[in-house]
Length: 290
Ligand SMILES: NC(=O)c1ccc[n+]([C@@H]2O[C@H](COP(=O)([O-])OP(=O)(O)OC[C@H]3O[C@@H](n4cnc5c(N)ncnc54)[C@H](OP(=O)(O)O)[C@@H]3O)[C@@H](O)[C@H]2O)c1
Image (cartoon, rainbow, N blue to C red; front, side, top):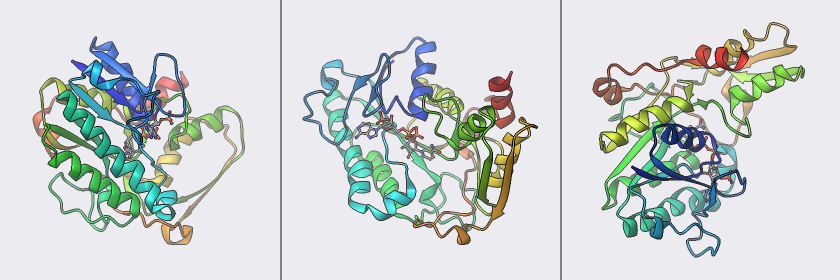
């Protein structure tokens, strides 16, 4: 399998790159602003960018689109930029994909839902609350309606190894390891399934190997709020100096509304791959703390 990963300098993309390489697939990954050894430059916003890796020449079987603007509150206040970076960039990649005859894989989110009655199955009705959610939905629909075959993975609360260590769990771990005093004000009313990016990579490998199409929820088996997640991490650092305050989402007064009962039920993946064992946050913490 020949796979091009857009956004391989990020959390999900880098984990997919590593896993697909380990499986001896022919993989190439791209960066945009954060160069990494072995990655090529690719800008989804400008297909005429002279520095872009020549994707039509390389002719991948699959384009995995992990490029994104994931800052939900920033998107709320920068609607046009959010549209360009989420929807237009996806349409641009679909054009290249058509030239290559490649299957498109898109990473989507539980921000497609209003969070009143999650966790959600693949066929639950969507109702995004924010600019980010609306744009992720528009991009997802563009991918699914395109003429080439497509796969959409809906994911949430992703953590795991990444070069910049910027995800929620990695940041707490780093601060604990650095002995930094932590003050955490976290919402007790936002629920989702923390998911290891390494599991997303392993699940996607199986789905691509088996030539699956359509929407799949991929989510860890824990369902918890942010306070519980932080507490789980902090348990591994008994000497950490922290103050943890549980507050409501409303009191945070963030620009973008959040789905409170978010997250997923993995109806399709669990039915089709009943033997697959997901890791959880404890497995991840044990490996990095040993
Ligand atoms: N992380 C989560 O909890 C989560 C939850 C739900 C859904 N998702 C979705 O999963 C996908 C991957 O998320 P992630 O957490 O891995 O994001 P991430 O770590 O922020 O990575 C984003 C990637 O996009 C690249 N990128 C940004 N602008 C680009 C452009 N114009 N052209 C090409 N590449 C560009 C970045 O490259 P540089 O860094 O080199 O600039 C980076 O490699 C996104 O679609 C996101 O919406 C993530």
